[in-house]
Image (cartoon, rainbow, N blue to C red; front, side, top):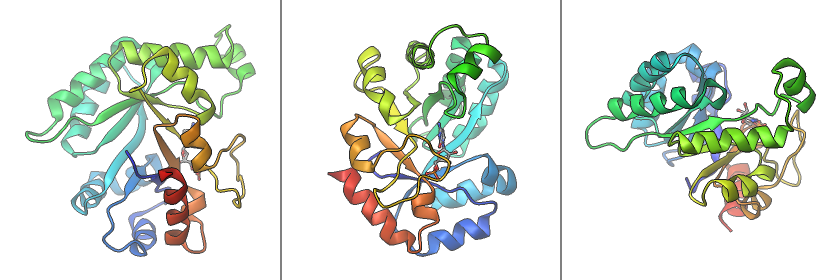
Length: 234
Ligand code: C5P
């Protein structure tokens, strides 16, 4: 996962394709979330895979273990590279998710990597304590879920760059910390609260970065992407 992952946050395929046009045939790493997947379905994912892109299918599954296992079997058949679940679904659910991915992986392909969402960055510590009745700090909950994901055999978590170092210390160096909340020094923060530059993310031990608006809403997306790539690769 050397390339910055571009969050393809568009409502439909035609807008996503218009954006991708400026990159020509360059293979990219793309994150497809619920908005685009629910409007365009698996066909669009297959089309992007055929074009040679790395695909992170960000659907954040959370259901009973058996249902998640079957869903993951279907997603693996699409040949995507990275998928995720909510760690709150529990260790058994995460283990079954992994097992579904293994079963669905096509012959000759590698299993999609599986990462967990710990606590959503939109959840405050107060909300977590009062609504979910989790009586620890947000950081401790994130670390706990990360360790649980590792015990279940997952490949990593989605987290803030600020959490990556501690998560890796408590799991392993190879445990993936995929981090959104990335901005170039010149960018607006939008609705992200704590942001870092690609270079800072690298220094904070992020394994991969997810970048949306700084590239997708840039006047020249290709130039913005090259800037992010250059900083991230150092
Ligand atoms: O536009 P921006 O760079 O803020 O986009 C970041 C992407 O990462 C979005 O698709 C957003 O949903 C996602 N994301 C996030 N924070 C998380 C998990 C996912 O910003 N904790």
